[in-house]
Image 1: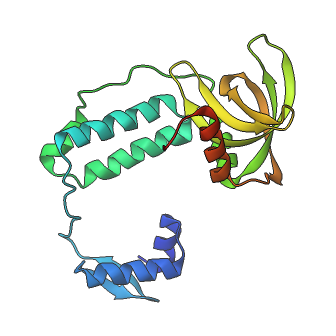
Image 2: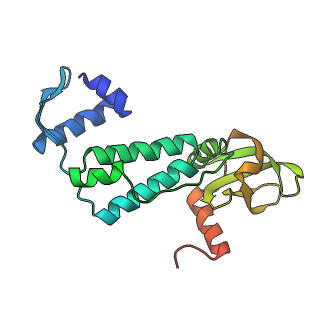
Image 3: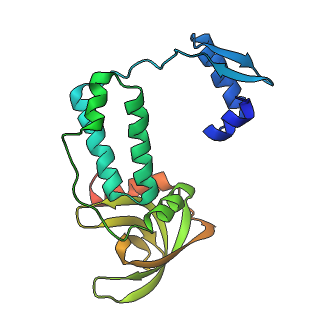
Length: 206
């Protein structure tokens, strides 16, 4: 395969690809080729087995299935992709646990279409303009600075600074009627806001 094609598929730069290929070759991976020509991985080479215990496999599976059942579609797909990658390089006796899990998640949350754009806004530290309805169905328009999402049994909550209330607030995602990510980056760093909120709530590292 051409280096350009590999880099595009892996979503990395060509320079990073060349560096990683050289690192793999130095570790003994039978990769033939060079920059400008392309690469071939000779048959018979496999990644070393990932040595997970039975409890570790069950923890991974339970976590991934929980995310698949309770996350937005993008997050759910990502969880299953991770499990597929780990299962593919696990020893045969561990792979059976991936195919036939003994711990199951049987609940699923609804109205999660807003979660993916909220996660995007958190990563980019962007303000969100939302139309929100409270428990009494009163509608308000808010500009919030989202910095975390909480997963509870009955609801998913976005934790944010609310410009209207000038304070930290918690918004149920299923009560957000509409949202729009703005071009404005909020003035505080997400990590700083998270620590401030944790201190205010009395949670987090002591």
